[in-house]
Structure formats: structure tokens, C-alpha cells
Length: 425
Image 1 (spheres, rainbow, N blue to C red):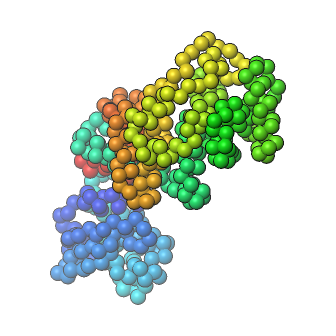
Image 2 (image 1 turned 45 degrees about the vertical axis):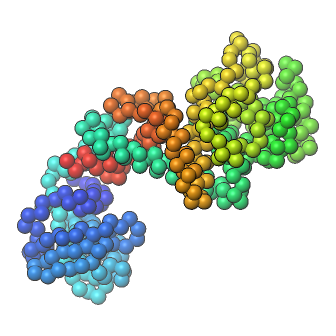
Image 3 (image 1 turned 30 degrees about the horizontal axis):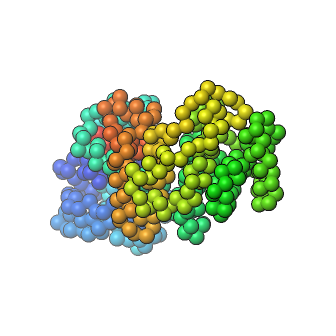
């Protein structure tokens, strides 16, 4: 049976082997007093361990391999960092290992002390073809394991988003308003058009939004034209005006429009069409150009109410895209979409700002917003709900999305508290 070295690390960390009558490969009695500190960086796998071999106590490091030959294969024999290794733990003892000074290192072969059932349980998880590896067992895991783990994953997801934001903050020399504009664009693009919206917001200079803030025609023509939607002759009056205005702005500001093919409409609800979302984004930027300071300062209710007070151009009352008239529909901002903006833009950037400057009140504010907002509605959350893993807030749903993408899809059960719980018992 083949398995990764990581499984041996797991077995060692949680002492999932028989402790009775342990012996080294030379037949010396062995007791594990301290397993050591798990080291995920370069160097021995477990540092500062304590073992008793015969009547002698040894303090030092422990290195773990599937095959004893891996000691030589990984170059440990000539690496001084491994000279303080007091025990070599292996599954297949096919080689006698020595330090760089040629002294022999005691070896423990775990194969004789681990129940086969535990290995089979691990194998069944990683070979599972279910939606998540533990789909048939997850209901067995106690809530005292699940929900603290989800809380940790919420933070982990925000930390991951911070890394993305941190790079932009450095690139734009801590211009948080500029960074917010890019993230806001991605949020308006939803999942399908997020990259196109990001490109749109990166193509345009933020100073132009501020310059033309009070001119809705210029703002609309600037965004739609740069997005590539005004590159052809237009038929209706509103479209003609925007196209004409953009031709002037394009020459004035030397703008290179995107290709209209970069935007996706297929299998989308009309409210999510990129043209309609650009109209909404234009409305936001036309009514307020400095959003970062505003969201940093105000509470969620004030921000939501402010957005809801902005009215789209009446052209969009019977259009979702240019020159294709529809039945009259509402132009109101849906609560779900505003929650989406919080979850995917306002929360991450407020958290990132707090983390960047080590100001806890902003990180707490971001977490509070997630806990106030209702759970997201999508296929992933619905699938977890069928497995009795319910999300009651956006903090929960963000955690579940992170769990699925970053743990379940990669079958990282040994790094997941739920997987660890199942494998331990």
C-alpha cells in the first residue's frame, strides 16, 4: 500500500501507533517521551524531541521517511542540520542511516506498530470520488470540531485575500483608493467577468473618475467605451451620445479600449450582464469618487443605504445591454448584491487595511460585517447543507467555500480538522 510521507507525520503527531514494546531496529527498548515540535520549514521534521533508548535519554530531532533510503536520497547524510537527529522513523527499514560524522542513528520502523485499518481509512478518503472525500462520514464529526474549524477558515480566507491585496498596495504605493477600485470592479464582475472588470479598472486612471464625477454622460462613455462596448455604430439615441462622447475622450486621454469579446453574457441572469453591472458601477463612481475613506469610517447600514439611494440612468429600466429593449424592470439595488459587494470587496479591503497597519479595530470590523450578513446562496453552500453542515452567516459560507476549494478539492484531509478527526478515531 502506497501513501505519502505526510501520513507518517500525521501518525507521529497524534501518536496513532501502539506504544507497547517499542523497539529500535537494533532491538533496543524505546520510549517516546516528547514527539517534538512539528517543523514545516527546512530542517528535521520534528525538533526538540525526547526519547529513551535503553537506559539513556536523548534530546534532539526526529526525521521521518517512508523508506530509510530517503535519508541519503534527500542529502541528510552530509547536512550538519541533521547531526542532532536522535531517531529516524520510517515505514520501510531498507537502509542504515548515519550522520555526517558517520555515527549511526537509531531507527524506529513504524510498520509493525500501526493498525492497517487506519491506513485503509486514509486510503478510502484520498481515493474517494465523492463531491468531498468525507461526504459519507462528515456527519460523524462533532460540532465542537467543525465550527471552531470553520471560524479558523474564515480568517484563513481573509488572510488569502490579504495576500492579493498586499501585492497591489505595494504596486500602487499604498494608494488604497486605487486598490479599492480594482477590487470593486472584480466584485461587480461576479465570478465570470471578474478578470474583465479588473482589466477595465486597471486600464482607466482613477483621476479620470474624479475629474468627470459630476458628468454622468462622460462617466458612462468612459467606462463603456473603455470596456469596448462603444466600438461600433450605435442605433438608439442614448448609445449614440455615449459613443460620440467616448470618441472625444478616447483621443483626449489616449485610451486603448478592450475587446468586446473579453466580456461574457452566456448562461447569465440579465442582472449579471456586464453591461448592466457597468451601468451600476458607473452610478456608484458618479455619485461618490472617494469610497475607501467612506467604507473605513461608516457602518454597514449607512453604506448600504447610501448605495441604495443611487439611481441608475432610466435607459436601463428597459435594457440590460445596448440596443436590445426588454420589458420594464426594477432598477433597485438588490440586498443580495449589496451583500455580495461587502463580502467580496468591502470586507477584504477593510481587513487588509487593518492587517497592513496592525490596527485591530478594522480587522474586527470586517469580521463583524461577515457575521452580520446572511449566508450566501450558491451550489457549494447548498451541497454542504445537504450534509447537515449549515451556514447561518456570510462568515460561515466563506469558510465553507474556502474548505471546498483549498482542502476538499485537493484532498488535503491531513491538514483539515474534520479529516483529522475522522482519521484519529
